[in-house]
Length: 122
Picture (tube, rainbow, N blue to C red):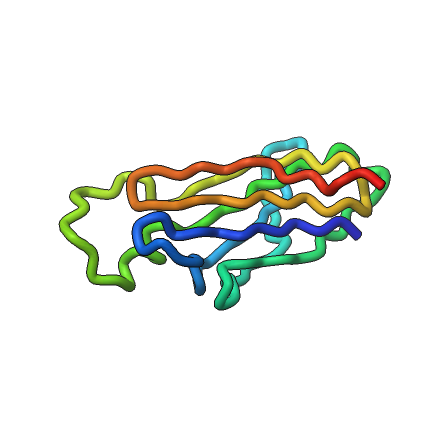
C-alpha cells in the first residue's frame, strides 16, 4: 500500500502543528471525491496514513486537505486579520502502489510552504 505522510510545522508559534486536522480524498476521473482518511496530527505534527492504491487505478489522484483556520483558532494570537484561506489543498499524483509520499509543510494563518520529500535512493 502507498503511504501519505506529512510533518506540519507552525511558523507562528515555532513548533509542530500538533492536532491539525488532515483529510485525504481520492479524486476520481469524473471529478468526484471519495474520502481515504480523516486524521489529526500527533504531538509532533506528523501524520502517516496508508492508502489502498489499486494497480489498475494508476495514476491515483489525491487531494490532501490541511484545516489551517480551525488549527489556528485554538490559539490566542496577535490580531491576524481576516483569514480567507480556510484550508490548504495539495493535489498529489500517486504513480506507484507501494511508495511513501511525504509532503512536509510550514504553515501560518496567511501563508504556507510545502515541498516533496522523496526518500533517498538505495
